[in-house]
Length: 513
Ligand code: SF4
Image (cartoon, rainbow, N blue to C red):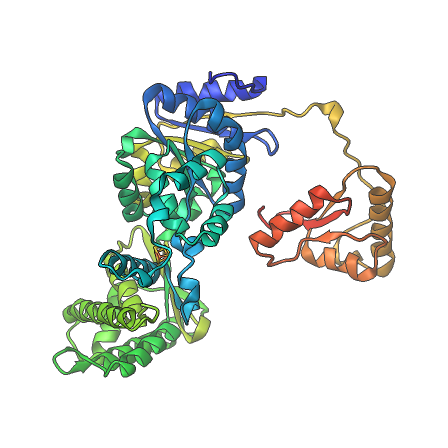
């Protein structure tokens, strides 16, 4: 057990289970209810095992607020256990420079990476003005000391860095090479190219790290998301416009870029007509799509990939020109060609492409077996934790972690601390939502919220019902979780709820905070 750190008995049990399982099979999973301290259990076990075996830790979270929660725990744990920890996010959240560029909303993560690399190169070549944030402060000892001693949340550090005119992204990237534990988003680490580069910088191989997965029930979705994409008429139109602005270069023989864009657009429209008929959507094979495009563009089917590669190269050169001109280095032609090239590489067993009428014609590619994305994780020690992993066998099978051992932490909250009451005089059935029923619900909520000398949170089964109650008029001044609230707005709402006395109105299964 780690030094002087007090865990509850059930937390020690879980931590011991994880440690012994990592020793036996390398892959541990546990399910524990909300409020049981999953984060502290996962951290405690992983840090204890890592220290004993000289390993590094990557802690994956899905949202920024989950990342903040881990940092909160680490502020207590890290100094006691003598480890260095840092939170990390991508440039999109951290680069202060791109927000100053005209057309910044056009940045994708690829174009931002291209933009950043080019700016840094110019700074190294002597043009300090190319990025005023890429300066000596980025890697300075005082910056690293600030990071490791105060353990700021990523947003806090971004603000600090901006105020002191240096790049938070580059600082965190540098700090992570000195850290024992790095917290980062799933999407970042599951991208094999990115994680390979990250680990190379860190100087560790995959078999020398423990990957802790917070809210691991999201693992499959996160893996699917990074290998799914869509192809639609709008993207083709944007690429066509870009081709015209760039002089409509030849791609192959007499075939111009706009000829291919037109053939791609017609292929989707014709496929919608021929394949869908009366249906809303249908599966589509790459060979069929390629055949339609080749016929429309009057090229041989086997020349299609050559054309796509030429389009890709054209897109790259457009990005270079834009970058030199100080514009956003993004190309729709590049984006379009890259998506179809990925499709041409994808196997039919692991991916499914669906053609639909959406947006005049849309092809959506879904990864149904993201085992290629998950396989690199199996080279490391892994800890999967969640409030909802059962049925375990299904989780083990779909993720492919065959040797994984699992533990479920049962009910840890004493029965006597809970009071569950129900009132059968009201109903939330839609056809019974008349004024009288809504009025009764309002009355009950008002009585509870004002009659108890406690903080009150009211969770509704739907946003619609919550709106009906608010519209009816209720004698309370609640803080309200709006549908579509951004994460920082939600966190601000929760913070006001914690600090104040107003009740909270929210929706069950609504925002994930
Ligand atoms: Fe942005 Fe930092 Fe790159 Fe400069 S060095 S472009 S501030 S990410």
